[in-house]
Length: 424
Image (cartoon, one colour):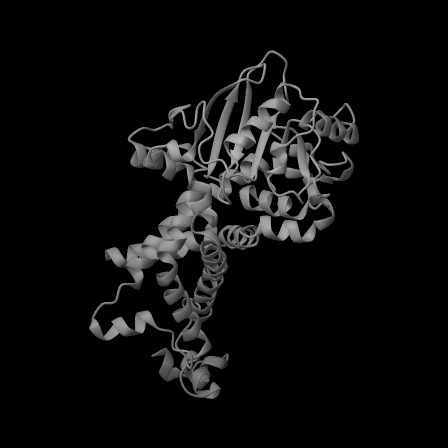
């Protein structure tokens, strides 16, 4: 068996075994690419508020207590997020999981997000994220709704998909110059079978690089060794160093805009976390959002900021328990290798390149979903073409085939009396 035939057989059987999972993961990823944009459109009543003229947001501690009242004491809030956009409701989230459960519906005990008007303290609504559409899509994408077992299935299927991309390039490679042009184009006026074959080969070739990037970045959530390998290639270490980065704008507020976000103008009275939040907005007026965990007495305060529309564009500010500023670290302070690792999610969903990148990721995921389908029909066509084993070749008319299959016996073979000549 030649090398190319061996690769073809592996490509064939591994593709059949993982095709359905790849189809599901690709389609759900395609849907989830624009989750943030679509969610805001579908939930305008939750995420939007009317910002009164010259109004100041209430202190975070006050808005936090309003959100907690909406949930009740049995579901303690874990973090809250404030936004630079004055027309956006502040959000507060609580989550409790059940580890080890086999189905995603049982894996989550509760997952709620409270949307609160920061000017009035009025609750816009409480969203149950457990069965929210995009959360359901995300769990299907991550693990087929099957918990840890599903995550392993998705991980191994994605790893197989990486092999299929590479083996597909080996099979695609033209034997000679005459076949080269055929490999780059689709013969649209060909038979259905040939058209399907061309689509599988050509789409697979043009998608190979983008699909490989999407698959490899996705594997970092499935296998720690993939994450460590990518981190090592980018930084020379298997783990990102904790707390690494410059002091940022410690003690200063360079670059502050004259018009500060309304969130930086919190109305008194202020607790330590309120004072820290106001200071954070003044230090990072370009931030899109700043969030904090549940305030804990006598513990340092850590605030996290979103400095752009990309997840890696983040920062972290540290304050004492009394709300006194200590330091700020942003993505700009990170070495390029660490920054590349931090960009993993944004690369995976395409947002690292902004909206054009998300469109590319969307279209690529949609086309990736066609590969298992066209591959299956290639197999189905070959399966129907294969003749039944040990069946004699069919030639001529039905009568002729019977004559071939049943040779004519002598007349005496049917008689009880055997001629004397036969006995001799």
